[in-house]
Amino acid sequence: MREKARIMDAQAMSRAIRRIGYEIVERNRGTENVVLVGIRRRGVPLALEIADCINAAEGAEVPVGNLDVASYRDDRLPAAERAAGDRRGVPFSATDRDVVLVDD
Image (cartoon, rainbow, N blue to C red):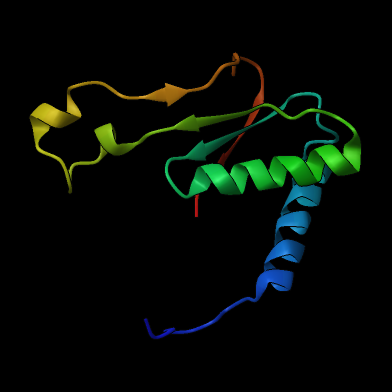
């Protein structure tokens, strides 16, 4: 398969993910109330990578959940499939938390 374009190499992507993690910590004055929720599919691995960077830098465990938004889309699935239910993987309460949604 022919590569269309390369915007970032692996090293630049790693730097960008670390910087995003630092920005999240700075803007929320720490990690105490921060949770990350990755939008399925490609947002979940990105959220996990950001959480790993935050955890390594801060020594704190930032919870990560995932959200499947397919049931909310009206441009891809028939209405019956959208109504079948959503699949959420958020194993923590988001009440009074700073929720950072992560998508690609």
